[in-house]
Image (cartoon, rainbow, N blue to C red; front, side):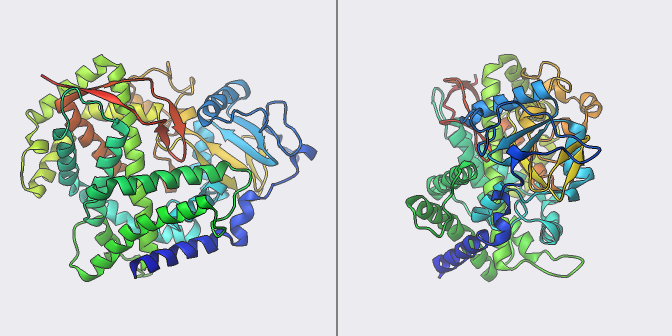
Length: 499
């Protein structure tokens, strides 16, 4: 029965993905090689030479995603904070000014839709959750979900976060060489399973992790493929995607089904199921619960694992920063009983929340790691009708890209931008900086709903690890910009026990 329901939801997602509205991001906004003058009072944004009929700039763009990121930085340097280039016949604008990003994501957000090609591709996996929905349905579900992420609710999960972090660290030994990215994926998956579903997925971590990785890689492939055979066509890859989705659907729908029969528990699923829209009195049905839980289940561990992996990599290359972090965690936690000793979960949560407020330098380290390697490295928007941005004409149906990876390296807003310097995040320097010069969690009404959850989780995991170990990179890490910014081929590191 559970598998039948999972397949039913998957079939509905495949069907809606083929509706006419979903095809809009694939249609060219105009024949770009016959471009006429911009409307009166506006102009076209500067663009590199070499655009070809049909192909646009695709022939001159780097095909390797990591190389393309660096090419985007060079485009910004050469042509300014609004650069136009063409993917096929699709006008694409890279916007790198904090002031203009504020306009897109916040001040005029109604004029810039979230419904890009990438979002439609993500719907194949996530359905119509907070990340992929738009308009009234998004606003309604955001209102319902918001209380679940109240700071007091998040604080109640600190004990689970700390216990999982401590048990991970206790299983390690001096001289071990784990793939740190894989370890971070496992511990954050365990935490989101327990806090979201009251379900320990440790024994299924490999199966679930493999499904998550395949889905992320497949969505990224579909996003960049010139021709994408839709899921109803039974190609081997489409069947593999369906199997990966069913793996996670069985986990999520099974948890929903159990919760219908069990008393409410202190987890996010229970809060979602009990919550009502104050304006309409509506609650989420099972399909909506599935989409919201799936969104948080995936986004809630993948992004945090990436942030922690890059933070540990940077710490391994900067021993003075590591020394200062060790001094802080030693002072705050002493022998680490809050992580490593058996104790009541509620008491552990209260104590860890108080301790986390003193992890000032630890938070700076994480923020600086997310500056250099933001997990959500690129976001897209589509103009709703023709729009004007800084005097430039942005035609209806075009694509706008805003990249924290690029803005976080903008020399007008960051001194020595490639350097790792946690002291950029003192209160004084943060207050003086433009709000959208740093936006790892997005901004405006659609800022990540789980940002406080993620920061608390990351601080506690990093602190638990720093109490017992140093981690030394075994090789140079390479970027893999998929839906999130992963380290390519993992991140093997050598653990050194602290004396």
